[in-house]
Length: 221
Image (cartoon, rainbow, N blue to C red; front, top):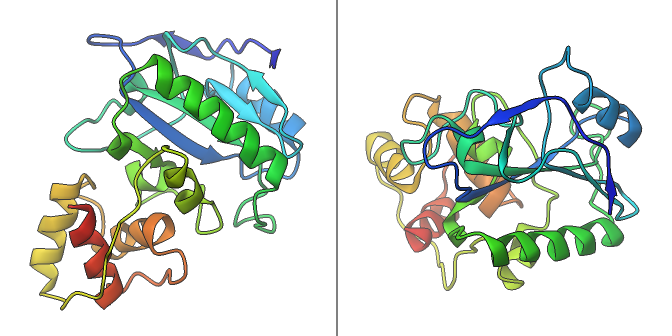
């Protein structure tokens, strides 16, 4: 684990205790470029960690400090996600530069790091999220190729168990359930559905809630 301190941080507001883990992809062609961006004071962007494709971990901001990774975001009524979250950037070119699966060394390092973080902080499984979960109107990362189900098997986050198809209801009920689950009630519903699908129904990301979407949402609730 190497250290490359970023100047882009401040103090956490409120109690200052992390209770959320937010996972991102860098969305850039090179990990070094992502590191340079997060260490440039002009960008006002950072994360606590970056994991390269070879599994190398770089520490940029101390966990006790507020890194600037989530931006305008929301989850379960919380709007200052940066104050309550630890952010991990995972290098991947993303949807804009040729989205690819996350390689095994990178996933192994992420699992190791995440378990270490969860062992030191009281972060519920339901608050291990993707950037697209907390900012569905703006973000797609870490995306549908991210191994959420595998992480859940390792005790990192949640995956719906025994979730068979469920009869869809109307869109108003769906929005209410998505809000109850945690999503931003002000975000477009199609974007919320896509964010949910990227995390919990990655085989189908079209913004249309089918019986499987309903079944997995109800199982998680």
